[in-house]
Image (cartoon, rainbow, N blue to C red; front, side, top):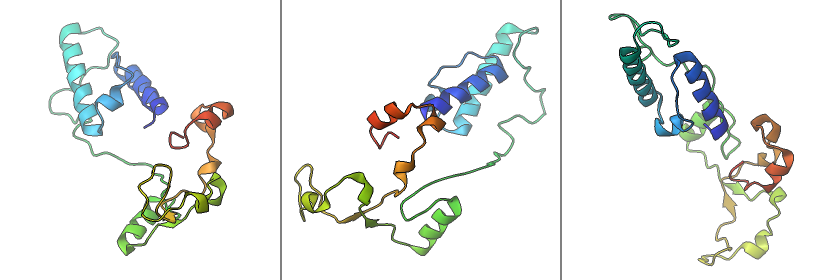
Length: 161
């Protein structure tokens, strides 16, 4: 999650539960299980003190399945990793076959490799390798998709993008 999607999830959970949840919810409860336990505890406490007639959904009756008892359904996954990996299946194949994902430095980053390269160097600003794990299409970042202005995207640290 980035901060935008974390807040969007929090807003949806606020609506679904009627609880007032913090903006740092997914960072405070970083796994689905931990988050579900927290929500269940909050709902239990809220229902115990509020009684009937609240805007919150009622807790399930004893003996019925709750979200904690149900399996998690992953409906989509996406990724990009060095070595041209664009799907979870490709990542698994890369790992399974022990493929080396190291490659030459990208030409579109403005790095003067000959100037930066210093074998065995410990000097800040110098590199001691001619290869690395890179996403070659990182420059194709779509700032609008993430609600970031093009100007802000240019000013951002590429690692933040």
